[in-house]
Image (cartoon, rainbow, N blue to C red; front, top):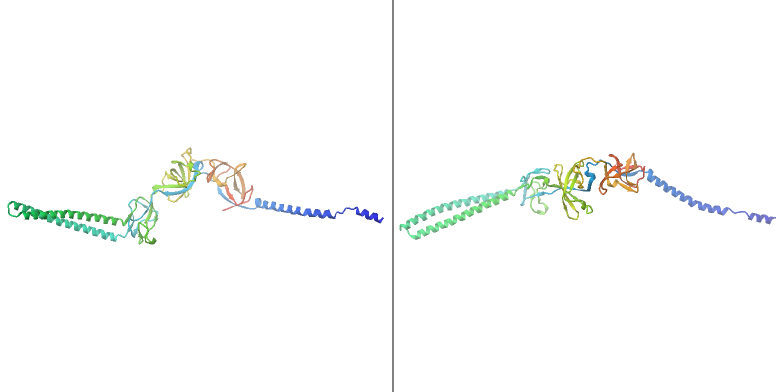
Length: 404
C-alpha cells in the first residue's frame, strides 16, 4: 500500500518552476511601462505645462498702400551725390576755422584761413618791384624825349651846314637805344605786374572757401595744425579742413539681391521710409541700376526736406506700375513679420499670444510673401500680439513668456 501511495503522490503537478518563470517575465514588462510613463510625463510637462520663451510683436495697420503692394522691399542708406573734403592748394598752418558741424555755408564762403605772413611779404616785394619798374620806365621816357629833341635840332643844323653829319648819326643812335630801352622797361613793368598777380594768388590760397553751397558734416582741422593737399609729416599733417555735402544731391542707395533685380526698372516709382521717421513716406523713383556684383540701385527723392540727412537708414518699397499714385490711402488688413507666418496642410496660420498662452490663428495673406513683412487681410486685428519665434515648438494652449 505504501508503494501505491508513493506513486499517487508522484502524480501531483509541480507549480514551483512556472511561477518563477512568470515572475521573470513580469519584471521587464513593468520596467518598460514605467519608462513609457516617464516619457509621457516628460512630454506632457515640456509641451503643455512648462513655460516657453517666445519673441513677439504687435500687429499694426500698414501706413499706406505701398507697404502692401510693392513688388520688392529693400533697405539702404541716404548718401550725397555731391560732396567734397575742402583742403588747401598749399601746405600751411591753420590760423582760424570759421565752420562747425551742421553749419550751412554758401558758395565761396570763407571756411578757414592759413598763416599768410610769407605770402604778404612776397606780395609787398612784388608791388615794390612794380613801382621800381615804373619809375625806371618814366626815367627812360624822359631821356627819350630829350634824345628826340637833340636829334631834331642836329638835323636842322646839318641842313644849314652848321654841324657835321656824324653828330646827327650819334644823336639818332642814342635815340634808337633809348627807344629800345623803353620797350624793355615796359616789358619789365608787365612782368612785375604779373608777379604781383602771382603773389596775390598765393595770398588768396591762404583763405579757404567753400566750393559750393551745402552743409558741413565733419570738421577735420583746428587752429595751429598744419594742413597740406597731400599726406605728409608722418601723419601729423591734416589733408582737409572740413567735409561739405550738397543737400540737394541727397539720394538713396540700396543693394538688391540678383535673384530679384529683374523686378527693378529705371524710373520705377518707389516709396521710401526713413528709420528715424517710420510714419513718413517719401515719394521717390529709380535713377539708375549699377551693373556691379551687388546690383546697387540709385533712388532719387522727389521731395526735399531738412529732416533727410546723410547716412540715415531707409527702407524702400519698389511699387508696381499698377499701384495707385496716392500711396497714402487706407487699406484693409494688418502687417506682420514674414517669419511669424507658418503654413501646413490646413493653410496659413500664426501663433497669437493671448492671456499668457499660445493660440493658433488661421489667416489669409494678401500680396507677395517673399518680403520682410506681409499683409494679413483676414484673421488678425490691429493690436494682436504675434509670436515671431519660440525656443521650441508650440502647441495649442502652451504657456508662454515673452522676451520683454
